[in-house]
Structure formats: structure tokens, C-alpha cells
Amino acid sequence: MPTRRPAARRAIPAATSIRRLRRLRRTAALRAWVAETDLAPRHLILPVFVRPGRAGPEAIPAMPGIERYAVGDLEALARSLEEEGVRAVLLFGVARHKDAEGREAWAPDGLVPKALRALRAAAPGLVLATDVCLCAYTDHGHCGVVRDGSVLNDATTERLARVALAHARAGADVVAPSAMMDGQVARIRGALDSGGCEDTAILAYSSKHASAFYGPFREAEDSTPAFGDRRGYQLDHRNGREALRAMDRDVAEGADLLMVKPALTSLDLLVRARSRFLLPLVAYQVSGEYAMIKAAAARGIVDERAAVEETLGALRRAGADLIVSYFARDLARWAREGR
Ligand code: PBG
Image 1 (cartoon, helix red, strand yellow):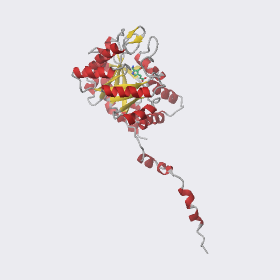
Image 2: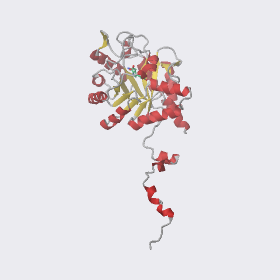
Image 3: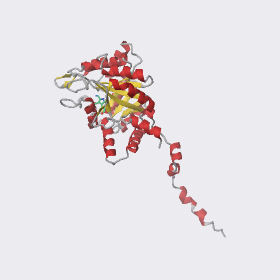
Image 4: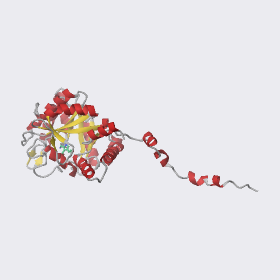
């Protein structure tokens, strides 16, 4: 006669078929222990708008919390950033006098070169990157030289190379061409190398889609095109393979880092670029993405810190090494404050 097993032992087999993934989510310590990615201030790059005129930061209505600085404000800003733990900035100049070609963009003593010198003197350890484009300097607001209503490619890359060289000579560690002209990386690399700036790195805005999310930035930079739009040179949001072709091309032309933007509409491209390229990948959380979170947080619709950590965390998970974000200072502050 078989003896009867106790009831408790008979119940065991059913339970073993469940994959209990929740075991490692049980406590904050366990969750932190098995976290696959992290998000820290060192991953962030803060965009900084530099405007002409006397000292005193100027608000940007569409971007609460972000200001346009005069060169005279930068010494204090650089010191604060160092103290706060922000390690890198991406500079954008706003022209004093705009013209058809955007000449002020490559003036050796223009706003961005002045800003670079001021920042370098005040905070030698800050990584200094500059946006290289003409749209904030041209009177028509397009990213290059216009003829018969469209932007000329090669005449524009020639000017972009002058801009990059002016920035490099003033001390930029990294120049970031964002005009979306073909051959801009090769042309800039050539100008930097023959101009004695072979150590200046290029962050190529390779995967840059025409976007509704650049609106607040154009208000900050006063760079809205006077006619037409940028779809003749920026990528179509329906295209992903074309973005990878642009990245391939820029790697071949000598890019040191690759940019993907807008960030939240490019998660697929980050994943694909991460497996395809060995270069550092940079995601740009653009002005409209910033403004949306700010607007929703101001109305109590989302918690600002949670929304920022979640979106930036997703960019890290998708494969971004570095992230350009207007929340860089906030993130550094939250890191100091802890949970
Ligand atoms: C310059 C440039 C733009 C942005 C970065 N570099 C504007 C544009 O292409 O219209 C957008 C950044 C942002 O929205 O935060 N061409």
C-alpha cells in the first residue's frame, strides 16, 4: 500500500512553473543592484545660448528655466556648473547682425569664440562643444547660403568649415556641425587639420530629422526660416535607413562622435546605431521635448523629476552614451539631493 504524501509537498510542482522575475524587484537595494544602465550627471551636456549685449541673463518664454547669456555672464555660469557637477556644454551663438551669408558666424572674435575663451578661463575642466551652423546668423534663417529659394550645399560646407575653425582656434574641444549639408564633416576635418587644429573632435549631427520639436529653440535663437522649411536638408521622419546611411557617411568622413535627434522620436535609431558603430553616441533631447515636460509638470500632469529620469533613462537604455539636455543642471541637482 503506498503511503500518502503530506498535502504541502504535493502543492510544490505547480509553483515551479512560474518564472518569478519579481524576486529581483522586491527592494530598492535589489533593483539598484541589477540595474542594467545608469544615468548620471557625467552623461549630460548642457546647451548654452550666448547672445550679444550687456550682462544679465534673459528668459526664453517657451523654455522656462533656460536663459540666454551675455558673454559677461559666462564666468559666473562656468563656476556654478563646475560646482554643480555639469561637465560639458554645447554653445549656441545668437548673432548681433544677421546677413544673407551669416558672416558673423566665422568671425574670429565673434560671440562664440569670446564665450569659449571666457568659459575656458573660468572653468578649465569643462568640456566645451559648439554648434556649427549658420541659421542663427543668416537674415533668412536657413542653415546655409540660399540661391533661388534653396540652400546651396558646397558653398555652405565651405562656410561651415570657417566657422568650425574659428571655434577650434578659440578653444573648443568639440565642434558639432548641425546644418545637414552633405560632406560637411569631411570639409570641416580638412579645415581643422590644415589649420593646426587636428586635435579638435567632431560631433556630427548625422541623424537629424526635420521636426516639430525645434520650435522653442528657434525662439531662443531667433532662427525660424523666413520662408519655406528645412525639409530640403533635414531627414524625413519616415526614414530610418537613410539616417543610418548618413551616420555611415559621417563615420567615413572622420566624425569622432555621432548625434541622433530629436531623442524621443529616434529610439529605434539609437538601438540600430549602437550595434552598428563603435563611436560614442549622443542623443539630443531637443527644446520641444523639454518644453512638453515643463508644461505638463507645471500643470501637475506629470512629476517633473520622474518624467525626466524616465525619458533620459530610456535614451541610455537604447544606447546613448551621452545626452544633450536642457535638464542637465536639474539632473545634477537631483543627483546631489539623492532620492
Ligand atoms: C541648428 C540647430 C537646431 C537645433 C540644434 N541645432 C535648430 C534647427 O535645426 O532648426 C535644435 C535644438 C533644439 O530644438 O533644442 N541648425
